[in-house]
Image (cartoon, rainbow, N blue to C red; front, side):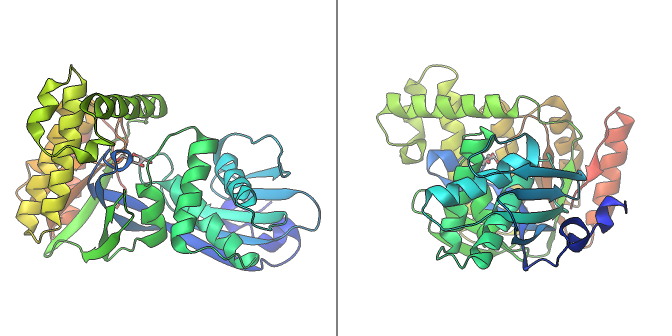
Length: 357
Ligand code: GLA
């Protein structure tokens, strides 16, 4: 057999694909753990994408081949959903069926450039790419917003994470030249230019996101409990920071993070300089570390190593936390040097990081 990266659709399935679809991963610049609180988020697409080639199957079986894992899995509608990437793909087929869409079995070849498990939403990229492909293949009457919502359902139901809508909206509407300002309650959105004279950096801390699903769901429950006690529909509706003080520990700090993080997103889109944007990122990290408690020591270290460089406007952990990646905004033209310096110092302290963007 040829190397996994070179396996062609026709070699796997005996015919050419009928179409190809893709979607990007995302990095969130500001607005972390706000989406399931009906708040604001500010992600941007990363250059890495997930591509899916597909064609109708000649029998009742679907076949999903992942070039990244060099793994071929068979799946039949309504059948048991296996582990890993298969769950996301089968999830997309199931949610479409449940939505009343007429789809037939398909063969798929999936290639992902989006780093898997690093907090850059490889799963959302996969879901949106698969749904786009199925829309094309079966001429489904669903728009990009429906695709994002269906992808979120697939993730919640079949991957067991009660995620918000940010990642799937970023994969469906994001591009690399803009940041997507999204109100997750109304789903109103605007593509805004990225901060000027600046370059984005994304580094992997090398810390696997263990316990991420359970800790994530626990944070979500804490937020729901805080909102219930405050008598608001969601923490987005807190009008005044002072009312969070009436909550017991740790709900007071969870609510404070959501309130302050929403404020930071609104400030960032009001037209700030790269310096001010960077300060908001630094403040976001402190809040995620101290109030929301989703950082880990290695991430704090990597963020600090970035923040202390003069060419860096700001840095923070990005995504759900508990490991994974951090994002920084650096002066244009200086990103390469910043990455090298931060990673060398990180390695010198016994950690193994790598460049993602
Ligand atoms: C994960 C979820 C998102 C969002 C972030 C935290 O990426 O999928 O919905 O909640 O965590 O901001």
